[in-house]
Length: 385
Image (cartoon, rainbow, N blue to C red; front, side, top):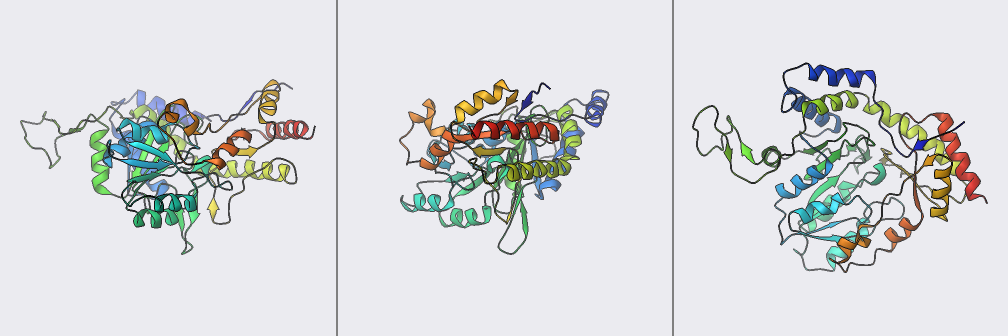
């Protein structure tokens, strides 16, 4: 049997296709009713007050940085183990980026190292922090918020990997990724390999009405329209006013309709991802393969299933020959030529050690049991040699 198994894959159903087709027959292809419907349903899903749909996750990060007034005088901390956009969004606004090492158990930003880093500099050196719920593992934002409050930092939670993920707080209450109870803003991505696939798309969530209003304005060129009490002039029903420089970061109704349909299946997708993770966990227990199981207070969203493995490149190449297309997440950002020239940075030894051995295995709800068993068998054969 010939397999061709990617590390991630979208799952599009007939209901998804019907949802998009219905919009094609409707009056609006963009900036119509499906946008607000998607926003409202997504906000309910993550338990936030507000949600703003945008063109992609990178646009979401950029708008968050703009809404929090990041400028050339701003200095922001993030993790080196993330996609480039988590740091680039600060650079888009002219700000400076610094990196804090990861916790080798969670692979997310190390909060103890973050506190030590902040304590080593005069207060006011940093203005914000962008934690990443890497692979779907939620950062403990309750603990991070205590640090942020002490050092007067804002928080943008990069939850692109973690819709449906959560952690249990000190009072035993579930805190869903993106609910806005601890972070000023949170962002999500709807790229095809993510939990909710729109082709492209992103969402920003918040509980701050002022930030919400600002984001809505910035995603549409910075325009203010009729009905907004902040209009300076009013020439008639057609009148709109450019008060700030924004961007065209809108998400069309076509993609929002797909997002609504995908969202309806999101809980089932999380359940299936956790089933797949459990099978991997059990298969690799007691082997040379290092897995990362969540702590007891963590509800992992499993966008990725990441292992650490010796002779990673050799294993990666051999798996491709056998039709298993794993991926590497991520090359540490501080080692990229662009960020190297902006350094130097603190020692980021955990991030660099992780990168040398990391491998993302196939993880998506439509992964068949037979495909997963084939993946497991091939990896065990290679690592036992």
